[in-house]
Length: 311
Length: 259
Figure 1 (cartoon, rainbow over the protein chains, first blue to last red):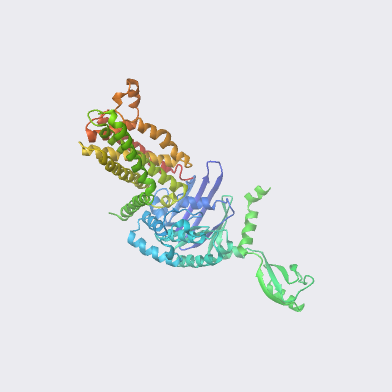
Figure 2: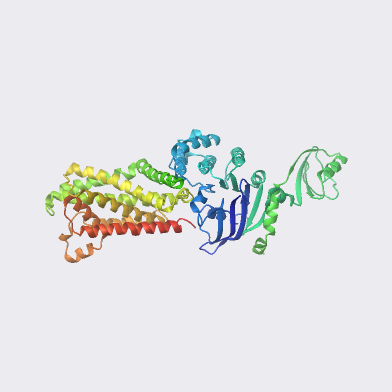
């Protein structure tokens, strides 16, 4: 079953900006789906329409088969939203915010209390249950929004930049938790600027640019499209000039580091063999940038609308 | 009761509980100031100045103004509760918690209206208690008193919501209470019978809706009114219907709330 189905979805704002230019998108039930795109691409507008915070101009939206125009309440009941900006009452306590939200979704108070304890514990916020929200750190506020979105145990969880401004340790624990939620059967749509996050978590991906979907497929298929990858090799001994690696684009960045660009037809074994022949040892190696990031940038740059804009 | 109805009922109760908790949480802003203001009115207008004014329509001045002062506090607080709570939710973006939920719009409107009604009645009861410390209040028509205060509170709670929907900043939520509501209330027969006014001013006073509300309420207590009580009730009921319909329309269309 399709968790989300968007058909010819358009949005033109009052100021004339066309945020969505007829997008079609399907997200399967149980999927962990990444919706990526540069700032102003239309991601948040699409999510806004899906969650009824933005009025669509035209097109249709279905959530688990419930049409937003005809079965709004049923569609809304399926969705849990973690928005980009903090949007809870800063003067209320953590528990009050959560119990209110559960109440708006019709969850009986006793059930809400049990779930609140379960999810606050899972996201290490239980100790803060009686704290006023404005006293929480940025990371805690983000986690509180995740707990709030899960209290009615939605079938679809939408995470709009959930880890923005969150330190790496908290981010990793949030990833683990979100994976767990997905493994339990909840469909997840994630938008993020941390492409490493999308690459690690998501199975399918759509890239949106200038209000259009420019790519929509499996993450693994998408990553295979990457033609070249740059590796940074840290050398055991200092070298005075760039080692000779025939057929490879190589650059010496400092006397202990070289960058080697490798395309699909080449392989790392040849590089290591050539370096060993020159008595150059490699201590460690890493990719220069995230693979998805490289692909994303190349796709957005190639997108006709972006090219037109650049010209 | 089906599942959706039961869920809606829980959501509706949650809005009312949240509004009640808000009123109690910030009692220094919601309950205490109207109590102090009412006490000052009763001391200054009732005791100090009122004793020199003498009787009005057969009642002491204090007895005459007491229903008007109670109604004034109900109007101000019903309006103030919804305008500040709804605009605060809009400004802080936590109105989105309600907008994304499956709760139908009519329950959101009714929930906020009930919040205004709750504060109006709480403050109205407080001011009634203060009035009783200064004078005797005879209730001649209890049902008229109850229905007038409830309808008036609903009218101004809904009006406050419309103000909050359109307001873009905090100045715009204080504009109407300061420049429209307060003058209309003061000229709405709280402190005097309009029969004291010249004929021209009496005719203008009849254009003031608050005059009808105050007089209907006063009729419930004292059995006297400057206006036709049936007309006053028709006006109040009509206003509730029109304002409720307007709030529902604004929320459904998302005006001022959704892009």
